[in-house]
Picture 1: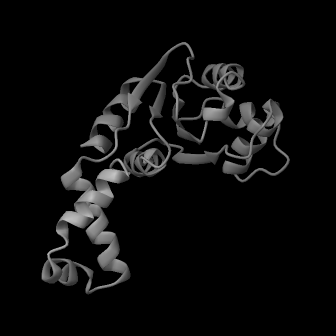
Picture 2 (picture 1 turned 135 degrees about the horizontal axis):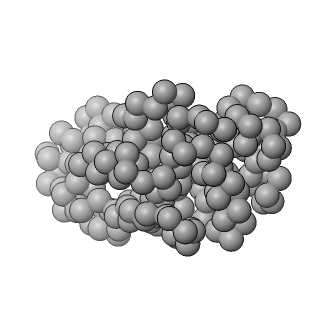
Picture 3 (picture 1 turned 45 degrees about the vertical axis):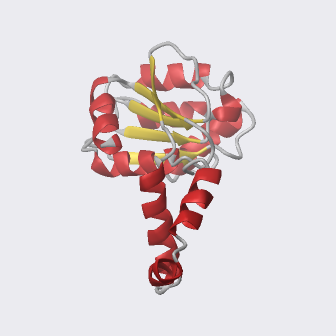
Length: 178
């Protein structure tokens, strides 16, 4: 349901931010949305966790396109007229720094869409924010059990035999559905 909702928003809006706590699944959701889009020039993922300056933002975006030693003019030239989705991952530490690059990128192409992930909204003009919530208890128990069973196939059987489903629920509750 989240993928469908965000896909619809990305179709309508040019700058969408998935905001929520660390570990909630913003990046996973953004990647699934990117897989579901049909832009003529595709979808591209730029990881910004190491970016600390405007120059490093441009470099990271350029690297997403396979361009080494990218700079603002190079990236803007690549984006000019492009029909694509650009996923900018881990933007929370760049909130004020990203305002100008986002504006320049969006001006470079009227068909460009940007999907950002951040622990906080970016506060940029035109931004549409979608809050990504932790899983509810039932869904987090299901996911925990699936992942644990993948690592140890007997996990689900052992939990059932020992009557430890309450323990799994408590672990998921303590982890706030993350």
